[in-house]
Length: 123
Image (cartoon, rainbow, N blue to C red):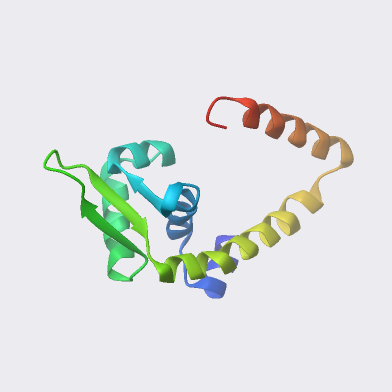
């Protein structure tokens, strides 16, 4: 799906992962680089480098929230516009490359697992 996402939107898979997490946050903003890195399963260093690349391309802004050094990362209007298309490209890819390949029984198992995960706290 990453091979379809980049040509259609200009986003790398890492860009999409970060912007999708921001998209799920209030105001498409996330406070705390380390907390966001943990949510993504990334190191803070990896996320910092990714955010720097995205910042140079006008996809995110990064601000110091306070003297304690907490960082606030926000999606730009440009990123929000791109994500409208990217979400559709990604959903189409998931349908074509995953969901249409499942048997009825496999689809039932996948739905059962998804329902269970959604029921978890924070799911």
